Length: 561
Ligand code: G6P
Image 1 (cartoon, rainbow, N blue to C red):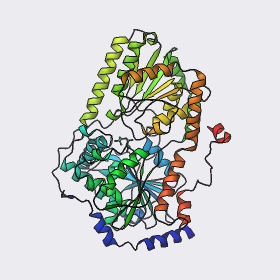
Image 2: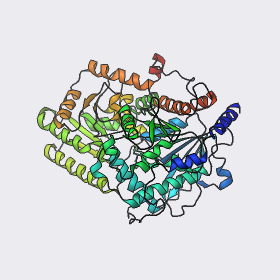
Image 3: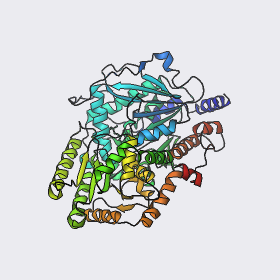
Image 4: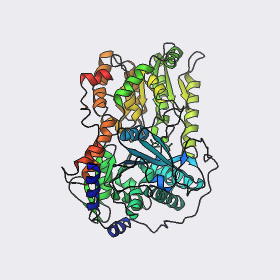
Protein backbone atom coordinates (compact mmCIF):
# COMPACT_ATOMS: atom_id res chain seq x y z
CA UNK A 1 0.00 0.00 0.00
CA UNK A 2 2.85 2.34 0.91
CA UNK A 3 4.42 1.57 -2.45
CA UNK A 4 1.14 2.33 -4.17
CA UNK A 5 0.78 5.71 -2.47
CA UNK A 6 4.37 6.75 -2.99
CA UNK A 7 4.35 5.82 -6.63
CA UNK A 8 0.98 7.40 -7.14
CA UNK A 9 2.07 10.72 -5.63
CA UNK A 10 5.35 10.73 -7.51
CA UNK A 11 3.51 10.26 -10.74
CA UNK A 12 1.14 13.05 -9.82
CA UNK A 13 4.26 15.21 -9.40
CA UNK A 14 5.34 14.10 -12.82
CA UNK A 15 2.02 15.45 -14.00
CA UNK A 16 3.72 18.84 -13.88
CA UNK A 17 4.55 18.03 -17.47
CA UNK A 18 1.47 19.59 -18.96
CA UNK A 19 -0.72 17.75 -21.39
CA UNK A 20 -0.33 20.73 -23.67
CA UNK A 21 3.41 20.07 -23.77
CA UNK A 22 2.70 16.44 -24.51
CA UNK A 23 0.40 17.39 -27.34
CA UNK A 24 2.93 19.80 -28.82
CA UNK A 25 5.60 17.17 -28.51
CA UNK A 26 3.41 14.54 -30.03
CA UNK A 27 3.20 16.62 -33.17
CA UNK A 28 6.97 16.55 -33.55
CA UNK A 29 7.78 14.60 -36.65
CA UNK A 30 4.20 14.30 -37.86
CA UNK A 31 4.15 14.23 -41.61
CA UNK A 32 1.85 15.51 -44.27
CA UNK A 33 0.36 12.03 -44.41
CA UNK A 34 -3.27 11.95 -43.47
CA UNK A 35 -3.56 10.17 -40.11
CA UNK A 36 -7.11 9.03 -40.62
CA UNK A 37 -7.59 8.34 -44.27
CA UNK A 38 -5.72 6.55 -46.97
CA UNK A 39 -6.62 4.49 -49.98
CA UNK A 40 -7.36 0.97 -48.88
CA UNK A 41 -5.46 -1.74 -50.69
CA UNK A 42 -7.10 -4.96 -51.78
CA UNK A 43 -7.32 -7.38 -48.87
CA UNK A 44 -5.28 -10.53 -49.18
CA UNK A 45 -7.26 -13.66 -49.90
CA UNK A 46 -4.87 -15.47 -47.62
CA UNK A 47 -5.76 -13.54 -44.46
CA UNK A 48 -6.67 -15.95 -41.65
CA UNK A 49 -10.34 -16.41 -40.95
CA UNK A 50 -11.71 -15.89 -37.44
CA UNK A 51 -11.89 -18.94 -35.22
CA UNK A 52 -13.95 -18.99 -32.13
CA UNK A 53 -12.31 -21.26 -29.61
CA UNK A 54 -14.74 -20.29 -26.84
CA UNK A 55 -11.80 -19.68 -24.57
CA UNK A 56 -12.12 -15.98 -23.96
CA UNK A 57 -14.86 -14.02 -22.34
CA UNK A 58 -16.00 -10.50 -22.99
CA UNK A 59 -15.28 -7.64 -20.65
CA UNK A 60 -17.43 -4.56 -20.44
CA UNK A 61 -15.98 -1.20 -19.40
CA UNK A 62 -16.23 -1.46 -15.58
CA UNK A 63 -14.42 -4.77 -15.31
CA UNK A 64 -11.79 -3.76 -17.85
CA UNK A 65 -10.74 -1.01 -15.44
CA UNK A 66 -9.82 -3.71 -12.94
CA UNK A 67 -7.70 -5.83 -15.31
CA UNK A 68 -4.79 -7.47 -13.54
CA UNK A 69 -6.13 -6.90 -10.03
CA UNK A 70 -7.59 -3.86 -8.37
CA UNK A 71 -4.70 -2.66 -6.16
CA UNK A 72 -1.07 -1.79 -6.63
CA UNK A 73 1.07 -0.99 -9.62
CA UNK A 74 0.78 -3.22 -12.66
CA UNK A 75 3.20 -3.99 -15.44
CA UNK A 76 1.37 -3.59 -18.74
CA UNK A 77 3.07 -5.45 -21.56
CA UNK A 78 2.00 -4.56 -25.07
CA UNK A 79 3.04 -6.53 -28.14
CA UNK A 80 1.49 -7.36 -31.47
CA UNK A 81 1.20 -11.04 -30.65
CA UNK A 82 0.08 -12.35 -27.28
CA UNK A 83 0.76 -15.95 -26.26
CA UNK A 84 -2.53 -16.63 -24.51
CA UNK A 85 -2.24 -19.95 -22.69
CA UNK A 86 -4.60 -22.37 -24.36
CA UNK A 87 -5.29 -25.77 -22.84
CA UNK A 88 -3.56 -28.58 -24.68
CA UNK A 89 -1.75 -26.25 -27.12
CA UNK A 90 1.99 -26.35 -27.76
CA UNK A 91 3.92 -23.51 -26.12
CA UNK A 92 5.00 -20.81 -28.57
CA UNK A 93 8.78 -20.75 -28.61
CA UNK A 94 9.73 -17.34 -30.08
CA UNK A 95 12.13 -14.92 -28.41
CA UNK A 96 9.53 -12.24 -27.78
CA UNK A 97 7.20 -14.67 -26.04
CA UNK A 98 9.95 -16.09 -23.81
CA UNK A 99 11.04 -12.56 -22.95
CA UNK A 100 7.59 -11.23 -22.12
CA UNK A 101 6.78 -14.23 -19.96
CA UNK A 102 9.92 -13.58 -17.96
CA UNK A 103 9.00 -9.93 -17.52
CA UNK A 104 5.61 -10.91 -16.13
CA UNK A 105 6.92 -13.68 -13.88
CA UNK A 106 6.46 -12.62 -10.24
CA UNK A 107 4.85 -9.36 -11.27
CA UNK A 108 1.21 -8.39 -11.37
CA UNK A 109 0.47 -7.57 -14.93
CA UNK A 110 -1.51 -7.41 -18.08
CA UNK A 111 -0.37 -8.59 -21.52
CA UNK A 112 -2.23 -6.71 -24.19
CA UNK A 113 -2.19 -7.15 -27.96
CA UNK A 114 -3.65 -8.75 -31.06
CA UNK A 115 -5.48 -12.04 -30.68
CA UNK A 116 -4.09 -13.28 -34.01
CA UNK A 117 -7.68 -13.34 -35.28
CA UNK A 118 -9.49 -11.34 -37.91
CA UNK A 119 -12.89 -9.89 -37.11
CA UNK A 120 -14.66 -6.86 -38.49
CA UNK A 121 -16.28 -5.80 -35.19
CA UNK A 122 -13.41 -3.52 -34.26
CA UNK A 123 -15.23 -1.67 -31.54
CA UNK A 124 -15.33 -4.76 -29.32
CA UNK A 125 -13.63 -4.48 -25.94
CA UNK A 126 -10.59 -6.65 -25.28
CA UNK A 127 -11.31 -10.27 -24.43
CA UNK A 128 -9.53 -11.27 -21.28
CA UNK A 129 -8.32 -14.39 -19.59
CA UNK A 130 -6.71 -14.63 -16.14
CA UNK A 131 -3.85 -17.05 -15.51
CA UNK A 132 -1.52 -16.92 -12.49
CA UNK A 133 -1.83 -13.21 -11.68
CA UNK A 134 -1.46 -12.31 -15.38
CA UNK A 135 -4.38 -10.93 -17.36
CA UNK A 136 -4.20 -11.54 -21.09
CA UNK A 137 -6.25 -8.92 -22.94
CA UNK A 138 -6.59 -9.29 -26.70
CA UNK A 139 -8.36 -7.57 -29.53
CA UNK A 140 -9.10 -8.77 -33.05
CA UNK A 141 -8.08 -6.84 -36.15
CA UNK A 142 -10.15 -6.19 -39.25
CA UNK A 143 -8.95 -7.67 -42.55
CA UNK A 144 -7.94 -4.23 -43.64
CA UNK A 145 -5.91 -3.61 -40.48
CA UNK A 146 -4.27 -6.99 -40.82
CA UNK A 147 -3.32 -6.27 -44.41
CA UNK A 148 -2.11 -2.69 -44.00
CA UNK A 149 -0.60 -2.75 -40.52
CA UNK A 150 0.72 -6.32 -40.12
CA UNK A 151 1.41 -7.53 -43.68
CA UNK A 152 1.88 -3.97 -44.87
CA UNK A 153 3.99 -1.44 -43.02
CA UNK A 154 5.22 -3.76 -40.26
CA UNK A 155 6.32 -6.70 -42.39
CA UNK A 156 6.74 -5.32 -45.90
CA UNK A 157 8.53 -2.16 -44.83
CA UNK A 158 9.86 -2.02 -41.27
CA UNK A 159 11.00 -5.65 -41.10
CA UNK A 160 13.11 -5.52 -44.29
CA UNK A 161 14.52 -2.05 -43.59
CA UNK A 162 15.53 -2.87 -40.04
CA UNK A 163 17.14 -6.07 -41.35
CA UNK A 164 19.18 -3.97 -43.83
CA UNK A 165 17.08 -5.17 -46.81
CA UNK A 166 16.09 -1.82 -48.25
CA UNK A 167 15.69 -3.56 -51.60
CA UNK A 168 12.72 -5.56 -50.30
CA UNK A 169 10.69 -2.74 -48.80
CA UNK A 170 7.35 -2.04 -50.49
CA UNK A 171 6.12 1.19 -49.00
CA UNK A 172 2.61 2.49 -49.61
CA UNK A 173 0.75 5.39 -48.04
CA UNK A 174 -2.26 3.17 -47.43
CA UNK A 175 -0.11 0.79 -45.36
CA UNK A 176 1.43 3.71 -43.48
CA UNK A 177 -2.05 5.04 -42.63
CA UNK A 178 -3.14 1.54 -41.59
CA UNK A 179 -0.11 1.20 -39.30
CA UNK A 180 -0.85 4.52 -37.61
CA UNK A 181 -4.55 3.62 -37.37
CA UNK A 182 -3.87 0.34 -35.58
CA UNK A 183 -1.47 2.07 -33.21
CA UNK A 184 -4.26 4.54 -32.40
CA UNK A 185 -6.65 1.62 -31.93
CA UNK A 186 -4.20 -0.01 -29.50
CA UNK A 187 -3.84 3.33 -27.67
CA UNK A 188 -7.62 3.73 -27.36
CA UNK A 189 -8.19 0.23 -26.03
CA UNK A 190 -5.23 0.46 -23.70
CA UNK A 191 -6.18 3.90 -22.42
CA UNK A 192 -9.57 2.57 -21.38
CA UNK A 193 -8.06 0.45 -18.63
CA UNK A 194 -4.79 2.25 -17.76
CA UNK A 195 -4.25 3.49 -14.23
CA UNK A 196 -1.88 6.28 -13.39
CA UNK A 197 0.56 4.02 -11.56
CA UNK A 198 0.83 1.44 -14.37
CA UNK A 199 4.21 0.87 -15.91
CA UNK A 200 3.94 0.16 -19.63
CA UNK A 201 6.41 -1.86 -21.67
CA UNK A 202 5.85 -1.97 -25.43
CA UNK A 203 7.55 -4.61 -27.58
CA UNK A 204 8.73 -4.55 -31.15
CA UNK A 205 8.49 -2.74 -34.44
CA UNK A 206 4.73 -3.08 -34.87
CA UNK A 207 4.08 -0.52 -32.15
CA UNK A 208 6.70 2.21 -32.43
CA UNK A 209 4.22 5.15 -32.32
CA UNK A 210 2.22 3.75 -29.39
CA UNK A 211 3.76 5.92 -26.66
CA UNK A 212 3.13 9.04 -28.72
CA UNK A 213 -0.51 8.05 -29.10
CA UNK A 214 -0.78 7.42 -25.36
CA UNK A 215 0.86 10.78 -24.58
CA UNK A 216 -1.69 12.46 -26.91
CA UNK A 217 -4.35 10.83 -24.74
CA UNK A 218 -2.76 12.47 -21.68
CA UNK A 219 -1.02 9.36 -20.34
CA UNK A 220 2.00 10.31 -18.25
CA UNK A 221 2.94 6.79 -17.17
CA UNK A 222 6.49 5.49 -17.49
CA UNK A 223 6.55 3.83 -20.93
CA UNK A 224 9.40 1.68 -22.20
CA UNK A 225 10.01 0.17 -25.63
CA UNK A 226 12.15 -2.79 -26.65
CA UNK A 227 13.12 -3.54 -30.23
CA UNK A 228 13.56 -7.30 -30.66
CA UNK A 229 14.96 -6.99 -34.18
CA UNK A 230 18.07 -5.16 -35.42
CA UNK A 231 18.29 -1.41 -35.84
CA UNK A 232 19.95 -0.54 -39.15
CA UNK A 233 22.46 2.29 -39.66
CA UNK A 234 21.35 5.87 -40.22
CA UNK A 235 21.40 5.91 -44.02
CA UNK A 236 19.26 2.79 -44.16
CA UNK A 237 16.79 4.10 -41.56
CA UNK A 238 16.38 7.21 -43.66
CA UNK A 239 15.08 5.17 -46.59
CA UNK A 240 11.84 4.73 -44.62
CA UNK A 241 9.47 7.35 -46.01
CA UNK A 242 8.22 9.68 -43.25
CA UNK A 243 10.65 7.99 -40.85
CA UNK A 244 10.29 10.85 -38.38
CA UNK A 245 6.66 9.91 -37.77
CA UNK A 246 7.57 6.33 -36.91
CA UNK A 247 11.19 6.21 -35.71
CA UNK A 248 11.01 9.75 -34.34
CA UNK A 249 7.99 8.74 -32.26
CA UNK A 250 10.29 6.52 -30.20
CA UNK A 251 11.37 9.66 -28.35
CA UNK A 252 8.01 9.61 -26.53
CA UNK A 253 9.19 6.52 -24.64
CA UNK A 254 11.16 6.99 -21.45
CA UNK A 255 13.52 4.15 -22.34
CA UNK A 256 14.20 2.57 -25.73
CA UNK A 257 16.01 -0.76 -25.49
CA UNK A 258 17.99 -2.55 -28.22
CA UNK A 259 19.52 -6.00 -28.49
CA UNK A 260 23.13 -4.90 -28.95
CA UNK A 261 25.35 -1.86 -28.57
CA UNK A 262 25.62 -1.74 -32.33
CA UNK A 263 21.82 -1.39 -32.69
CA UNK A 264 21.74 1.20 -29.94
CA UNK A 265 24.52 3.21 -31.54
CA UNK A 266 22.75 3.14 -34.91
CA UNK A 267 19.69 4.64 -33.29
CA UNK A 268 21.79 7.20 -31.39
CA UNK A 269 23.25 8.28 -34.73
CA UNK A 270 19.72 8.63 -36.11
CA UNK A 271 18.57 10.75 -33.16
CA UNK A 272 21.68 12.90 -33.29
CA UNK A 273 20.63 14.14 -36.72
CA UNK A 274 16.88 14.37 -36.05
CA UNK A 275 15.43 17.89 -36.00
CA UNK A 276 14.45 19.15 -32.54
CA UNK A 277 16.33 16.40 -30.70
CA UNK A 278 19.06 17.55 -28.31
CA UNK A 279 21.74 15.21 -27.05
CA UNK A 280 21.61 15.03 -23.25
CA UNK A 281 24.04 13.40 -20.83
CA UNK A 282 25.24 9.88 -21.56
CA UNK A 283 22.65 7.99 -23.54
CA UNK A 284 19.82 10.47 -23.09
CA UNK A 285 18.17 12.67 -25.68
CA UNK A 286 15.81 15.56 -25.14
CA UNK A 287 12.80 16.72 -27.13
CA UNK A 288 10.94 19.79 -25.88
CA UNK A 289 12.11 19.33 -22.31
CA UNK A 290 11.31 15.63 -22.08
CA UNK A 291 13.99 12.97 -21.88
CA UNK A 292 14.38 9.63 -23.61
CA UNK A 293 17.09 7.20 -22.65
CA UNK A 294 18.41 4.48 -24.94
CA UNK A 295 20.31 1.33 -23.99
CA UNK A 296 21.45 -2.16 -25.00
CA UNK A 297 19.73 -5.07 -23.23
CA UNK A 298 20.59 -8.36 -24.98
CA UNK A 299 17.60 -10.66 -24.72
CA UNK A 300 18.25 -14.13 -23.33
CA UNK A 301 16.61 -17.42 -22.36
CA UNK A 302 15.62 -19.29 -19.20
CA UNK A 303 19.02 -20.95 -19.22
CA UNK A 304 18.80 -23.26 -16.20
CA UNK A 305 15.23 -24.32 -16.95
CA UNK A 306 16.02 -24.94 -20.58
CA UNK A 307 19.07 -27.02 -19.73
CA UNK A 308 16.95 -29.18 -17.43
CA UNK A 309 14.29 -29.51 -20.12
CA UNK A 310 16.89 -30.70 -22.63
CA UNK A 311 18.33 -33.22 -20.19
CA UNK A 312 14.87 -34.67 -19.69
CA UNK A 313 13.98 -34.50 -23.37
CA UNK A 314 17.12 -36.45 -24.24
CA UNK A 315 15.53 -39.43 -22.45
CA UNK A 316 12.15 -39.04 -24.21
CA UNK A 317 10.78 -41.49 -26.80
CA UNK A 318 10.91 -38.64 -29.36
CA UNK A 319 14.66 -38.16 -28.86
CA UNK A 320 15.16 -41.93 -29.04
CA UNK A 321 13.34 -41.99 -32.38
CA UNK A 322 15.57 -39.22 -33.70
CA UNK A 323 18.71 -41.04 -32.61
CA UNK A 324 17.52 -44.29 -34.14
CA UNK A 325 16.63 -42.54 -37.40
CA UNK A 326 20.18 -41.21 -37.63
CA UNK A 327 21.65 -44.73 -37.84
CA UNK A 328 25.07 -43.42 -36.86
CA UNK A 329 24.99 -40.26 -39.03
CA UNK A 330 26.33 -37.04 -37.52
CA UNK A 331 23.60 -34.42 -37.12
CA UNK A 332 23.93 -30.79 -38.22
CA UNK A 333 20.96 -28.63 -37.28
CA UNK A 334 19.33 -25.43 -38.53
CA UNK A 335 16.20 -24.02 -36.83
CA UNK A 336 14.63 -20.84 -38.14
CA UNK A 337 11.35 -19.24 -39.03
CA UNK A 338 11.23 -19.44 -42.84
CA UNK A 339 12.42 -15.87 -43.40
CA UNK A 340 14.85 -14.31 -45.89
CA UNK A 341 16.82 -12.74 -43.02
CA UNK A 342 17.81 -16.19 -41.72
CA UNK A 343 20.29 -17.00 -44.50
CA UNK A 344 18.83 -20.45 -45.17
CA UNK A 345 19.70 -20.34 -48.89
CA UNK A 346 23.31 -19.39 -48.14
CA UNK A 347 23.45 -22.16 -45.52
CA UNK A 348 22.24 -24.83 -47.96
CA UNK A 349 24.79 -23.58 -50.49
CA UNK A 350 27.50 -23.88 -47.85
CA UNK A 351 26.39 -27.42 -47.02
CA UNK A 352 26.46 -28.22 -50.73
CA UNK A 353 30.03 -26.87 -50.91
CA UNK A 354 31.00 -28.86 -47.81
CA UNK A 355 29.82 -32.11 -49.44
CA UNK A 356 31.46 -31.16 -52.72
CA UNK A 357 34.93 -30.54 -51.27
CA UNK A 358 34.79 -33.19 -48.54
CA UNK A 359 33.55 -36.36 -50.27
CA UNK A 360 34.66 -38.39 -47.23
CA UNK A 361 31.75 -36.82 -45.31
CA UNK A 362 29.10 -37.96 -47.78
CA UNK A 363 26.79 -40.59 -46.26
CA UNK A 364 28.16 -39.72 -42.81
CA UNK A 365 26.29 -36.55 -41.97
CA UNK A 366 22.81 -35.11 -42.40
CA UNK A 367 21.58 -31.53 -42.17
CA UNK A 368 18.20 -31.25 -40.44
CA UNK A 369 16.64 -27.91 -41.37
CA UNK A 370 13.53 -27.04 -39.36
CA UNK A 371 11.79 -24.00 -40.86
CA UNK A 372 8.18 -23.28 -39.86
CA UNK A 373 6.39 -21.16 -42.47
CA UNK A 374 5.84 -17.53 -41.67
CA UNK A 375 3.96 -14.49 -43.05
CA UNK A 376 3.09 -16.44 -46.18
CA UNK A 377 0.76 -13.74 -47.56
CA UNK A 378 3.90 -11.69 -48.30
CA UNK A 379 5.48 -12.40 -51.66
CA UNK A 380 9.09 -12.40 -50.41
CA UNK A 381 8.20 -15.18 -47.98
CA UNK A 382 6.59 -17.28 -50.69
CA UNK A 383 9.69 -16.64 -52.82
CA UNK A 384 12.13 -17.74 -50.12
CA UNK A 385 10.09 -20.89 -49.52
CA UNK A 386 10.28 -21.78 -53.23
CA UNK A 387 13.99 -21.05 -53.37
CA UNK A 388 14.80 -23.13 -50.29
CA UNK A 389 12.67 -26.07 -51.45
CA UNK A 390 14.22 -26.08 -54.93
CA UNK A 391 17.74 -25.82 -53.57
CA UNK A 392 17.29 -28.63 -51.07
CA UNK A 393 15.84 -30.83 -53.81
CA UNK A 394 18.89 -30.09 -55.95
CA UNK A 395 21.41 -30.96 -53.20
CA UNK A 396 19.55 -34.12 -52.25
CA UNK A 397 19.33 -35.11 -55.91
CA UNK A 398 23.05 -34.44 -56.49
CA UNK A 399 24.53 -36.25 -53.48
CA UNK A 400 21.74 -38.45 -52.10
CA UNK A 401 21.82 -42.21 -52.11
CA UNK A 402 19.00 -44.70 -51.80
CA UNK A 403 20.11 -45.12 -48.18
CA UNK A 404 21.06 -41.51 -47.38
CA UNK A 405 19.31 -38.11 -47.61
CA UNK A 406 21.79 -35.25 -47.18
CA UNK A 407 19.18 -32.68 -46.07
CA UNK A 408 16.04 -33.35 -44.07
CA UNK A 409 13.65 -30.44 -44.37
CA UNK A 410 10.67 -29.86 -42.07
CA UNK A 411 8.19 -26.96 -42.00
CA UNK A 412 6.29 -28.21 -38.97
CA UNK A 413 6.34 -26.16 -35.77
CA UNK A 414 7.99 -27.98 -32.83
CA UNK A 415 7.34 -27.41 -29.15
CA UNK A 416 10.13 -26.05 -26.93
CA UNK A 417 10.50 -29.46 -25.30
CA UNK A 418 10.82 -31.30 -28.60
CA UNK A 419 13.31 -28.72 -29.86
CA UNK A 420 15.42 -29.00 -26.73
CA UNK A 421 15.77 -32.75 -27.36
CA UNK A 422 16.76 -32.15 -30.98
CA UNK A 423 19.33 -29.52 -29.95
CA UNK A 424 20.86 -31.97 -27.53
CA UNK A 425 21.12 -34.64 -30.21
CA UNK A 426 22.78 -32.30 -32.73
CA UNK A 427 26.58 -32.41 -33.16
CA UNK A 428 26.60 -28.98 -34.77
CA UNK A 429 24.14 -26.08 -34.90
CA UNK A 430 24.52 -24.08 -38.09
CA UNK A 431 22.99 -20.71 -37.24
CA UNK A 432 23.86 -18.36 -40.00
CA UNK A 433 21.39 -15.47 -40.35
CA UNK A 434 22.26 -12.63 -42.68
CA UNK A 435 20.99 -10.30 -39.96
CA UNK A 436 19.27 -11.13 -36.69
CA UNK A 437 18.37 -9.07 -33.63
CA UNK A 438 19.59 -11.75 -31.23
CA UNK A 439 18.75 -15.34 -32.32
CA UNK A 440 17.72 -17.19 -29.22
CA UNK A 441 18.09 -20.55 -31.02
CA UNK A 442 21.84 -20.03 -30.65
CA UNK A 443 21.44 -19.52 -26.90
CA UNK A 444 19.04 -22.43 -26.54
CA UNK A 445 21.44 -24.72 -28.39
CA UNK A 446 24.22 -23.87 -25.93
CA UNK A 447 21.93 -24.35 -22.91
CA UNK A 448 20.66 -27.70 -24.23
CA UNK A 449 24.10 -29.31 -24.62
CA UNK A 450 25.50 -32.00 -22.37
CA UNK A 451 28.38 -30.07 -20.72
CA UNK A 452 30.44 -33.30 -20.68
CA UNK A 453 30.03 -33.85 -24.41
CA UNK A 454 28.77 -30.63 -26.01
CA UNK A 455 28.10 -29.96 -29.66
CA UNK A 456 29.59 -27.05 -31.59
CA UNK A 457 27.84 -23.80 -32.45
CA UNK A 458 28.64 -22.27 -35.85
CA UNK A 459 27.24 -18.75 -35.67
CA UNK A 460 26.88 -15.82 -38.04
CA UNK A 461 28.76 -12.70 -37.09
CA UNK A 462 25.54 -10.83 -37.97
CA UNK A 463 23.41 -12.40 -35.24
CA UNK A 464 23.14 -10.27 -32.10
CA UNK A 465 24.11 -13.38 -30.13
CA UNK A 466 27.61 -13.32 -31.69
CA UNK A 467 28.57 -10.45 -29.37
CA UNK A 468 28.09 -12.76 -26.37
CA UNK A 469 28.67 -16.33 -27.62
CA UNK A 470 32.34 -15.93 -28.30
CA UNK A 471 33.02 -19.67 -27.96
CA UNK A 472 31.13 -20.29 -31.21
CA UNK A 473 32.87 -20.65 -34.56
CA UNK A 474 31.96 -17.23 -35.90
CA UNK A 475 31.39 -17.06 -39.66
CA UNK A 476 30.38 -14.62 -42.36
CA UNK A 477 27.32 -16.30 -43.93
CA UNK A 478 28.09 -14.63 -47.26
CA UNK A 479 31.37 -16.57 -47.55
CA UNK A 480 30.27 -20.01 -48.66
CA UNK A 481 33.75 -21.59 -48.44
CA UNK A 482 34.31 -20.26 -44.93
CA UNK A 483 31.01 -21.67 -43.66
CA UNK A 484 31.80 -25.02 -45.30
CA UNK A 485 35.25 -24.99 -43.66
CA UNK A 486 33.77 -24.09 -40.25
CA UNK A 487 31.35 -26.98 -40.56
CA UNK A 488 34.21 -29.36 -41.30
CA UNK A 489 36.15 -28.02 -38.33
CA UNK A 490 33.08 -28.32 -36.07
CA UNK A 491 32.44 -31.94 -37.06
CA UNK A 492 36.05 -32.86 -36.39
CA UNK A 493 36.53 -30.82 -33.20
CA UNK A 494 38.10 -32.78 -30.33
CA UNK A 495 36.20 -33.13 -27.03
CA UNK A 496 38.54 -30.90 -25.01
CA UNK A 497 38.08 -27.99 -27.44
CA UNK A 498 34.31 -28.47 -27.55
CA UNK A 499 34.21 -28.30 -23.75
CA UNK A 500 36.57 -25.35 -23.64
CA UNK A 501 34.33 -23.41 -25.99
CA UNK A 502 31.01 -24.48 -24.49
CA UNK A 503 31.75 -24.04 -20.75
CA UNK A 504 32.22 -20.25 -20.71
CA UNK A 505 29.21 -19.74 -22.99
CA UNK A 506 26.98 -21.72 -20.64
CA UNK A 507 28.37 -19.82 -17.64
CA UNK A 508 27.64 -16.55 -19.38
CA UNK A 509 24.06 -17.59 -20.17
CA UNK A 510 23.43 -18.79 -16.63
CA UNK A 511 24.30 -15.33 -15.38
CA UNK A 512 22.78 -13.35 -18.24
CA UNK A 513 19.50 -15.18 -18.41
CA UNK A 514 16.07 -13.89 -19.29
CA UNK A 515 15.18 -12.89 -15.72
CA UNK A 516 18.31 -10.79 -15.53
CA UNK A 517 17.33 -9.18 -18.85
CA UNK A 518 13.84 -8.24 -17.64
CA UNK A 519 15.17 -7.00 -14.30
CA UNK A 520 17.88 -4.84 -15.81
CA UNK A 521 15.52 -3.31 -18.36
CA UNK A 522 12.80 -2.54 -15.82
CA UNK A 523 15.30 -1.15 -13.32
CA UNK A 524 16.62 1.16 -16.04
CA UNK A 525 13.05 2.19 -16.90
CA UNK A 526 12.40 3.05 -13.26
CA UNK A 527 15.61 5.11 -13.19
CA UNK A 528 14.49 7.25 -16.10
CA UNK A 529 11.72 8.75 -13.96
CA UNK A 530 13.65 9.56 -10.86
CA UNK A 531 16.83 10.74 -9.32
CA UNK A 532 18.72 7.66 -8.13
CA UNK A 533 17.57 6.70 -4.64
CA UNK A 534 14.04 8.03 -4.98
CA UNK A 535 10.96 5.86 -5.49
CA UNK A 536 12.78 2.73 -4.44
CA UNK A 537 9.41 1.04 -4.03
CA UNK A 538 8.85 1.31 -7.76
CA UNK A 539 12.22 -0.28 -8.35
CA UNK A 540 11.41 -3.05 -5.89
CA UNK A 541 8.14 -3.74 -7.69
CA UNK A 542 9.84 -3.84 -11.05
CA UNK A 543 12.65 -6.12 -9.84
CA UNK A 544 11.05 -8.56 -7.39
CA UNK A 545 13.58 -11.30 -7.94
CA UNK A 546 16.70 -9.12 -7.77
CA UNK A 547 17.30 -9.88 -4.12
CA UNK A 548 15.84 -13.37 -4.51
CA UNK A 549 18.73 -14.62 -6.57
CA UNK A 550 22.23 -13.51 -6.98
CA UNK A 551 22.75 -14.68 -10.53
CA UNK A 552 26.37 -15.63 -10.38
CA UNK A 553 26.92 -19.02 -11.97
CA UNK A 554 27.72 -20.65 -8.63
CA UNK A 555 28.33 -24.42 -8.57
CA UNK A 556 24.77 -24.70 -7.21
CA UNK A 557 23.30 -22.81 -10.19
CA UNK A 558 25.38 -24.93 -12.55
CA UNK A 559 24.20 -28.11 -10.84
CA UNK A 560 20.58 -27.02 -11.19
CA UNK A 561 21.22 -26.58 -14.88
C1 G6P B 1 10.16 -11.95 -34.67
C2 G6P B 1 9.60 -10.65 -34.15
C3 G6P B 1 8.35 -10.87 -33.30
C4 G6P B 1 7.37 -11.74 -34.06
C5 G6P B 1 8.03 -13.05 -34.47
C6 G6P B 1 7.10 -13.95 -35.27
O1 G6P B 1 10.72 -12.68 -33.63
O2 G6P B 1 10.58 -9.96 -33.42
O3 G6P B 1 7.76 -9.64 -32.98
O4 G6P B 1 6.23 -12.00 -33.27
O5 G6P B 1 9.15 -12.74 -35.29
O6 G6P B 1 6.59 -13.28 -36.38
P1 G6P B 1 5.02 -13.09 -36.60
O7 G6P B 1 4.92 -12.14 -37.75
O8 G6P B 1 4.51 -14.45 -36.89
O9 G6P B 1 4.45 -12.53 -35.33
